[in-house]
Length: 187
Image 1 (tube, rainbow, N blue to C red):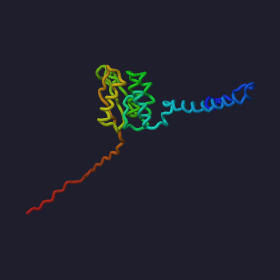
Image 2 (cartoon, helix red, strand yellow):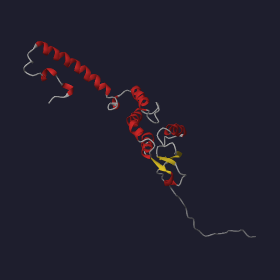
Image 3 (spheres, helix red, strand yellow):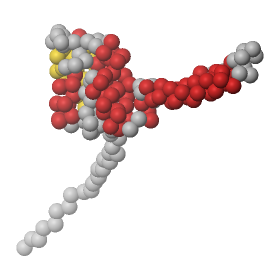
Image 4 (tube, rainbow, N blue to C red):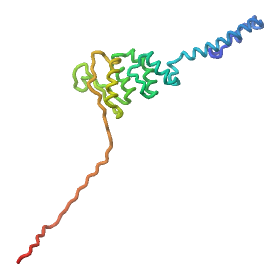
């Protein structure tokens, strides 16, 4: 079975013309050009090969696909994930699922809660994350980027960072019992 990657027109020639030198030479020339074309086509498969692209190409693709919350200072793996998912997020733009996927990609383990889940005002939502590296500037940049993916009628109330730690607690006490003896000197 022939594959498009190793296809040779010379091998496909019918026996009636396979002996002609001009036909053979033409087929070899076409085969050579087909191999060049195949290698050029492989370079066009940018999105499927994003895991192997250099960082500058990932940055260019982020602009091309308008990746939400794309920041050049993010780690390369996060950037790749943002670019890979950008098209799907644009399809689901304005949904809670899209916001939750973007938040999870950026913050790590996170949840998006709608207003009715936490008793907020209508059309508001909040994000809860366990990522302790989230700071105020990070949240400010995310709020700016969230404008691209959330519904225009919804508002981000807050980003809650949950900190959990196991602490050893030691409790000590002492009990002192005894009689009260008073010694006095008389005289």
